[in-house]
Image (cartoon, rainbow, N blue to C red; front, side, top):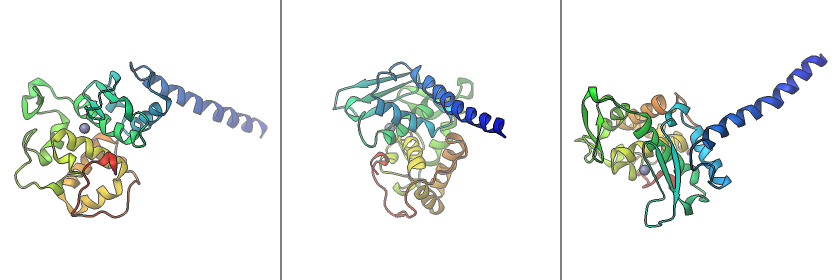
Length: 229
Ligand SMILES: [Zn+2]
């Protein structure tokens, strides 16, 4: 009996320390991460925890900048840039979920040249037909600028999501994490939102569904920006 007690005690002591070391090692290895303030590191790690770990494998660098005329944060395939004044913001973690979703979209989900170019471009860069993101973009978009015929603003989780396919992806990911109940309510009424919800659940969040957000949603109104609700 005594031996069992000792074993359990040792197990509980060792396991959390090992897990914490593993998590901090991953982020500390990314250049720029270790110089973030403690609160921002925590918010960043919380945001990253929602994603399948492999989804963030393309992120290579975190930078901060001070120019307040630029957006609060910018993310590409390998780089995340955060405006210094938002590091202490209350909604920092939400902002990071949105930005990390851009990293997944542009960095983790990649196609190959042999599949041919899709109608979507990221600036001047082609996006190949077998890039998994293309399946998501095609729900509402004909290319990176125009909605598909028959689309309307209620097919998007927020007003910002309706501005381009990349913001559609990032806002849908953030809405999935922070407003999952509302997303399910909207998806029950809207076929395109149901497809976006299914894509996020299966491809980005490892089949998870979160008990977040309110248990009601106005079917006829969308907020502008999911980081602010
Ligand atoms: Zn964005």
